[in-house]
Length: 383
Image 1 (cartoon, rainbow, N blue to C red):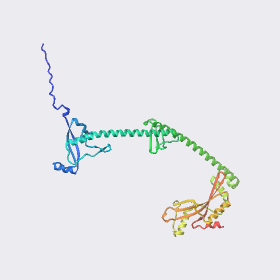
Image 2: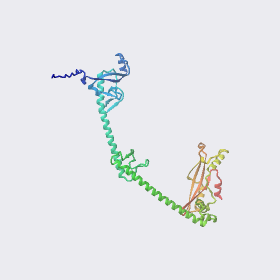
Image 3: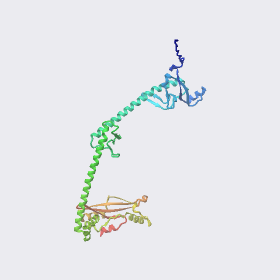
Image 4: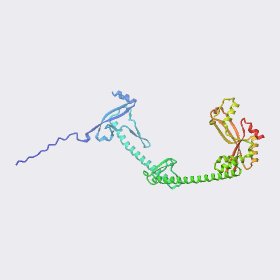
């Protein structure tokens, strides 16, 4: 039996299989200054500011090449990096500028320098981010410890704190604490802030309830005092309505006020008639007979009278002598027309405010002592 020998034929080895012998076509972009553009024209170039050419980069230098998502390879000329005198690296986003067309080795040297400084620049940025993050975390931890150790501190009411999230105001601004993302002690802040917030709500509700109860007690006290006065001094008709529960408290207090201040009945009561007073003043001073003042356009500025005439002082002393248990104060009311402020139309009314304490009630009444163009009030003092 014959023996068959199989011979395997291998393809000849390619002479270009050496990776070091391969190159990559790469775009190189740079700028020419005006001097560089002149030199380019003298050398037979196009003289354009933006120069683009294709260079072949060996495989051993591919670290000087950047390939974007579209597969376009560019030499690392932009952005470029500069090392300052303070050893800080600055990133410059423009392409390099030359005063003469550079050769390929100049471009390779710049790309190598950019590659080296880029790594240092990114490392410095990462270190800065880490330092900033650690500083921020330390600040958050300090604020959290201060908040948790001070029972009087409160988180912001809006938005209301929850068990997982709250906002805390600090001198440097507002911080947001999240129990799901923060580390201890910062993650403990939302739950404590929520607990204090709910406790404050309960305390405020209880305080409001007590305040309301006190107000109702004072109101009932006033009603009893008014009822006792009506039963003693009220008219038969008022007593009958009070017994039926149909006499309003305001009417009863007004009757009490009339009774208490009866000795001052010769004075004319102060009423809110500013619109009518302004109309009369403008008709008298400016001859504007057809003027009409809307009460909604009237503003009254009131204060304690800064000075007093002899007649006003006499009225004040008369009230104090007639009713020594009252408190009497001279008041100045300036009535201003808001529609035409440039015209400076205003009326000054001097009033006499008198208050008297009767049980739980403080009764008050104001009288007109004098007013611009008003002789009735002055005459009432002389009678």
